[in-house]
Image 1: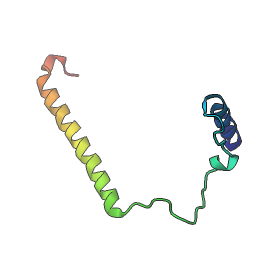
Image 2: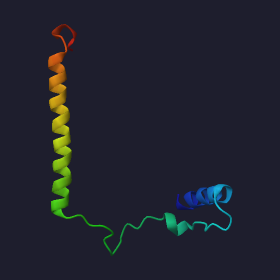
Image 3: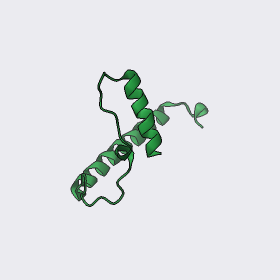
Length: 78
């Protein structure tokens, strides 16, 4: 799959890229599953902050749905 991705990308670069643009290599598309260096670690506090923001956004959606449900006449509610 890496070879195919590299080939397709190189074709696109040759067709649409600037003259002399650097072509890709197969190794550019190989995933590094066993990396000895962590690329971008996230702290526990950062994770909590993200989940808190998601929960808050979801809570706002739920409350707005409840408000909209009250505005819909009972005869039209499912």
